[in-house]
View (cartoon, helix red, strand yellow):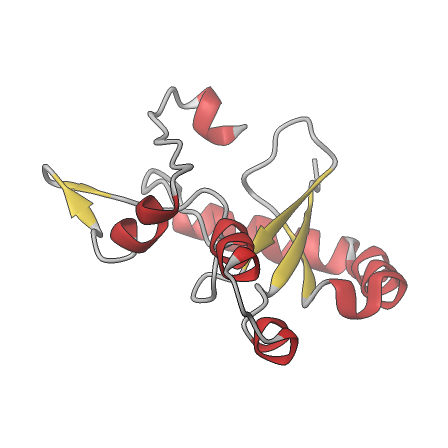
Length: 133
């Protein structure tokens, strides 16, 4: 929602080769590429001091809710955090910043002769982001 509000371009990569190729391309034409499906999305125009104060206030206010959601969802999510990327949607599930994306997990699961134990090990770490606004 924030990407749409800021009128930024998004590349929709659906082919399996795209996932492998884009992992090694971090910059194009002087622009840094980021995955919008992973946590830690930054736009570079945030006021750091204001964001830290807001994050601390929100964290204290929503602590009971995040703890409840974590215990409710258990192993389905790695953590529950407050998301800055949402405007109107109540929550979003994103993958870990350094782990496999959901698309890469789908690709690995669909490969022939995959071992179920290995696919569980390579499963994406999911984070539930809730909208504090």
